[in-house]
Length: 373
Image (tube, rainbow, N blue to C red; front, side, top):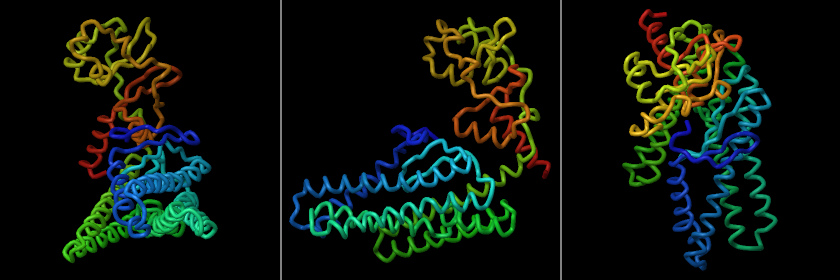
């Protein structure tokens, strides 16, 4: 999740990040304002003024997007659903919520909060415009544009196309009626895909009608929504496959132990290449000191392997992410994804009893699929 993004800081304990694709949309919005909209609205300004106001307006717009995502996140936190981060990217923003809500009403409130925040922001900006419309021209221009764009953001997100907020509201309503989360997701995803294909069709029609810039953008949004709707349903199907299965069913219990004073070149030649394992407990006097993985080795230049010890690069035991033997496989897979790690130690009563790797879980899923279970 975090690859290809820049960390900005935290708000209410939620990490805020910028995806590299954000810079593309930031430039396009700023250029659209500075080169087209602002010159039409205020032809007497200088070129520098257009760009300064354009940059300020773009920053305020993405601040509005961030508030939209924070509204989702704050409601999620109140419902006891962890939120790892918010990332601004080319299509706006996305909150990385650690798990699905437990009840339909929780999802309804979480999904509704974002567009509601955008509507409130639109009202605030238009209210300020009414109060200040006879004052500074640049300020009034910014306020009117932000009022309009936040209203459009709210309307767009209310489209019942899963996984847009409106689609999640729809899923919550269907879920509440049917009491079947999987069925509700299937229906909402199908509707979301239909709306996505409509976007693609309209975009292609606009391209052939000569409006290729807007048409390409709308078609691109449709493609993104179709992929997101499909991926969201697959995620629910994956959770259904792993439901009721725990770490103890797939973990590896015969993990080769290594000593902390072992050099990395010895680790590679005598253990990694020999066993094809990617993760090794570091043990001293029958006590686990930490874990060393393939990633630890890859972070060290190869010419330094002979002089670097395992204990110098390992993750100490008290800093390791751990799971228990009874922890669910879906929750473990979510943790691996959110933390960007490939294996987790399985600990019981402070003792290491095994390692569960992403490969173990994927092999388990593949085996169930082959057997038709």
